[in-house]
Length: 286
Image (tube, rainbow, N blue to C red; front, side, top):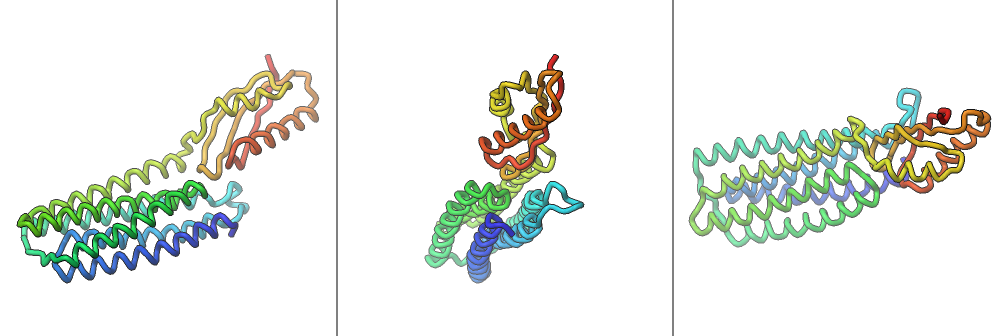
């Protein structure tokens, strides 16, 4: 396992521990005071931990080296794991909506006190710190898993703030607000899942990941290149694959064309970050 994957694994393990500590505090306290909003928030935090486990599994598979069956490597398994996280979010969202509707149809009074607000404020602070750290590391390590998990954590912050508002409403005599807020929480969770699916499906469906103009300008900087077209890019942000066609003089010797090919590959990889594979088709200039 290379250093990048080891860093991501360490981050996910630390966040997993924090998420589940926060989740159990919310769930246990939510049941104690009969607050469906706090319980819903706890389930959301618990799903954060579940997504961390999925992420760790995805990282383990994605870190495996290239082999005969996977000549391009296993890195897309990290993206696939991000999609599983989105599915977990959808399931959590459905469960919260179901419980919210049931609470609306069968009202119950929550025992909200000052401790309820302290619990929620502390968990918001923890999640905010986790989100900021995870977001910065996701950018630095170009990790789909960390980015997906950061989005999950951000939604947890919004959820907790909404719960605090619901607790205030219950305290001043509007208990009906609590199940309504729990449904809103579920919708926010589902939205986070949609964002993750959109980003991850783009990778798995080979959506273009780079603007072709910088690549064309770089390639045309070689004197022997008369034209550059059919530029295609795909892959993950940390594993970009490029295909392109170049036109050269029809009478260029094969050896010289081969050398030009390698020089272009080296130049692209040196100037453009995270390009791991380049396929260049050489054709005669007409």
